[in-house]
Every structure is written in structure tokens, then in C-alpha cells.
Length: 328
Length: 298
Image (cartoon, rainbow over all chains, first blue to last red; front, top):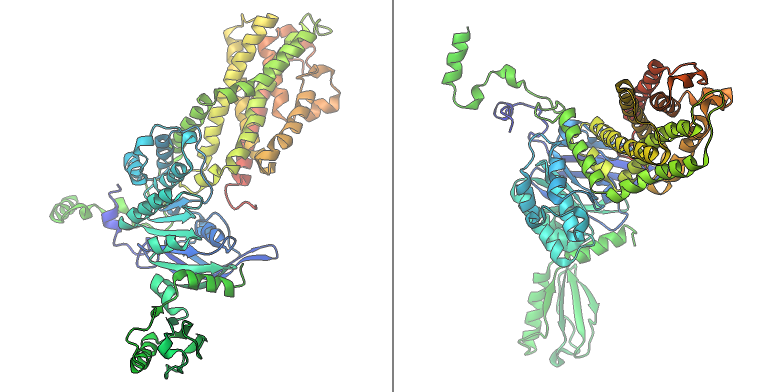
């Protein structure tokens, strides 16, 4: 470790001060006449696990490639660890770990050789043994990469990406194409990095991955951020509407519904028939449930059959957003 | 003054007491002192390149096979002496094939290898690290020089066994072989890295790389004696490394009396070294300027 760090820590403008880890304003990428990114805004704080969620072709990888300096942007302002990635400075690259979407090919090297090879380029790399423990490949350290399974190769990719002990780690679709066990192993790994205080940006088209790992997420579709926020903000407040539903019992087969909150929309049968399902959509589900219960009790029904109050899941919200953005 | 400083230092706690001059505040783009430099990175790259040679014996054998086959088949066809000399024609051809064998490994082999590594994403991955980028080229040159040396040893052995190529050479001639081999393979390797700018991907690499190499072999005195070629062809060939490598190899394996039919009237060692050296410099400069590390169109 550098002896300079205790003195430097107080210095202003070392690129890792109070600013956000990532700050993106109006990012545009055009390929000729085609526009891949139509003005992306993002902020990621230090130590956050942030997910870019979206369908294939949404612009996730293009965004990551611009943030990591692999691709030039057409317009907009981008700061990653306080530095414009377009400058591609060597000292800046040392603080960033990248795990690209495509599987690496280190066919002629053993797992340990591949990791120590990449570690050699960094000023303060992690010990190879520690990296191998982090990715769970200690037992395979002497195995040639060409003999590994897909899940193991993905871990080698990650090992190579973190060998330099970066502050900020980009994972582009880390688990696409892996079996459930391998996916969970990689999730555990991401949680360990997060526990070490690293900032992590991952792209995915799996909602369970976002739920399992990320504190905040942005949904990207058609080259734009459709929505961004914490997971509860995404699943709860986007539409903010819940559904109260029950099945009409015989005693209330044809009874008109009681007074409901003004925003309530009744789906299905407001009118009648025993056994039919009534669905009431409202932003104030408790206010809707109370009169329903009183209404049932007045008719001698103490238990409304199959009464439910449901909020939209992240998946419902996501599919709704993707649909609105006109992406199929 | 120095005493005063020492007192203050010992009074202050911990590492923060270091003189500020040793740890000048760094701006966001300043490269920290500990960032590994060209030599460390080159050593790391060279190790990996050589491991890949050792672990791909099959690929190595096939790379070497074509020049060996060429030597065996054509060496069996050619006979007689070069007009105006007592030198067997076969010996001239052997010197040419050794030069072409070096270029085959250093130029064609490397240009294709680069395209494959770019396709596989390795180039982009290395570019994402703080590696000094010239280290990638340096590692390739190390690999190519070693492979070209192996190729040369095999070709000389085959020529000695099958065609009685005389190997009782003077120390001076072995030395000439060493520097022509080193400079020639380095020049061709750097030329290959620069040329890889024209190679779109691994699938088309062989098709893009083979034609210029084939043409150079015909006009540089590999298949046909250089002195029998039309003047304009000789002039064209003189711009490229292969002609000079073949001439250098002739100066190693042919008697000095052969220079009577050399168009220059001598071996021109100084000029060979100059042209090959210039190609190294130009190849490196072009590579640094044009090599596609990242941001390549899909």
C-alpha cells in the first residue's frame, strides 16, 4: 500500500471526495442516424449497489461501455469517480473493475495464472489467494481455464475484474445463461464486494437479480431511463395503486357496493351474482376495505371470501413501464 | 533548519508526519507512483505469451509445418547451380525459405492471432486495466522472436538433413544469422500489429493477411532468384522487410563468391540493419497510433 494515502486523504479533488461515484447528465449515443441512448441521467453514490434493468437492446451495455471508457459518447456529461471516462487515464482505470458481458478466454492459462496476470497491472492488487476465495475457485486454482464449466468461467471473469481491488465494479449481465446454483453463487459474491464497501453497477434483465442485490435501480428501455429509485419506490409508488378484491358470497350476491374512496375503480362485477370476483383498484386500499367490511357485517357476513389487498409487484411495474416505452 | 524539521516530525504522530514534498498532493489524473510500469507489464505479458506457445504445441507444429513442407517439396524439385556461380540453386532457395518462414510466423501468424484475441475480447479487457499499452506489443514481439527462432532451427535442421546444407559456418556468420533473425522478426511483428488495423475480424484474417505476404515472397527472392527479377519488382520489394531478410539469410548460408550475381554487388549488411530497424520504428509508431483497443464498431 502507498504510504502517501494518510497524507493525501485530506487533499481536495482526488476524484473520490464527497461527489457521487457516478454522475451522468443527458448522455446520448448515436450510431449514424440511429440513436442508441436518448439522454440518460443517472447518479450512483459511493458504496451503492445499483442495477440497470431493461430488456435486450435497451442500451444497458452501451451505457456501461461509455461509463468504463470503452466507447465514446455523442453528447452529455459523464463523471465516473470524478473523472471523464473519455480521458481513459491510467490511474483512473486502476480504480475501476470491469466484467464485460462476453465470457473471457484465457484458454492457455490456469485460473491462478489468469488472475495473477491481470493483478500484475495494478498498483495495489488483492492477493491472488484472496481473490480465488472470494469467487470460490480456490480448488480450481491449478486448472486450465479451457477445462472449466460456464459458471466457473464467469467466476474467472469476475476474479480478473476485481484482481486490482477496484473501488467501483461494473458487472454487465453477470448471470445471464447460468444455472440457478451458479447465479446464487455470483449473487453471494456481489454481496461480499458490497460488504467490502465497493460501489457496484450491474446490468440485468432479471428482476429477481435486482431484488436480491440492488439498493437502487434504473429501468432503461429504448435508450431512456423510464424510472429510477429505490426498489420500494419502484414497486410501490410508480403507479401507487393497489387492488382490493373478494368473491361475492350468496348473502351479497346482488347487493350494491358501499361508498368507496373517490379514486376507486371497480373492475369485474359491481353488480352481481354469487361467486363472482370483485376487484377495486385504488391508491387508498385501507379506506376501501373498511366500508366493505362494515357492508358485509351488516348483511351478516363476518368473513368476506378470499379478501385480498395486493400491491403491484416489481415485475408488474417493470412490464408496465417497458410496455409504455413501446418495447416488445 | 533540518534539526527543527526533525523535531517537528518526531513530535507529530504517525505517518502523517512525512515531509509533504515526498507526497505532493495529486490531482485526479496523476498516476500514482506505484502504478506498474512498462517493464513489469511487459514481463507479465511475455510470460503469458510464452506459456501459450508451450501449451499449444499442436498449433506451433502446424504454424511451422507450411515452410517445412515448402522447403521439402520445392527443395526436391530445384537442382543445378545459379548461372554465373558455382552455388547450388537449392541453397539460394533454402536461404529464402528461412526468411519467408520467419515472416510467416512473425507477420501472418501474429496478424491472425491479434484478430482472434480482439474477437475474444482479450484486447478490450487488457485495455480496461491500467496496463501500459506498449507492453502488449512488446509481449507479442517476445513471442514472435522465440517462435521465429524455433522455426529457423527446424528449417536449418531439415535443410541440413535432407539437402546437405553446409553448417560449418564461421562465428561471424552465426552472428549475422542472430541479428537478421532478431531484427527481421521484430520488424515483421510490429508490421503485423500495424497491419491488423486492416483486419476486420478473426474469420477474415487469413484472407486479408495472406495476399500481401504471398506477393512479397514472389518479388523478394524467395521462390525466384532475386537477381533474375525485373528491376521494378526489385525496387518495390526493397521497400519491405522480406527482401532484406532473404538477402541477410543468403549472406549467412551462401559463399561470398555469390555476391557477383547480387544486384548490389555485396551483402549490404549495414543497409539490411537500417531498413529492418526503420521498419521496427515505423511499425511501432503506426501500431501505437492505429491499434484498435476499444470503441470498435460492431
